[in-house]
Image (cartoon, rainbow, N blue to C red; front, side, top):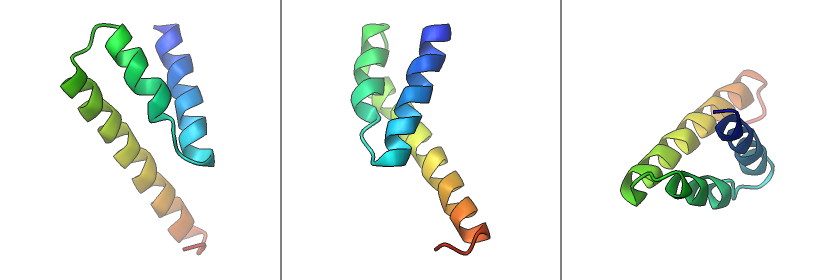
Length: 64
C-alpha cells in the first residue's frame, strides 16, 4: 500500500509541474493487475479532481 501512495505523490507532483503523471500511474496500475479500461478511468478521475482543486485554489487567489 505504501508504494501506491508514493507513486501517487510522485505522479501528482509531475502533473502539477507540467503534466505527464499519467505516464507513471497507468503502467503501475496495469502492473498491479488492474484492467486497462479501469486503470484509465481511475487515472482520469484523479486528473479531474486535481484539476478542479487547482482551479478553485487559483480562483480564490485571483490568479485565474
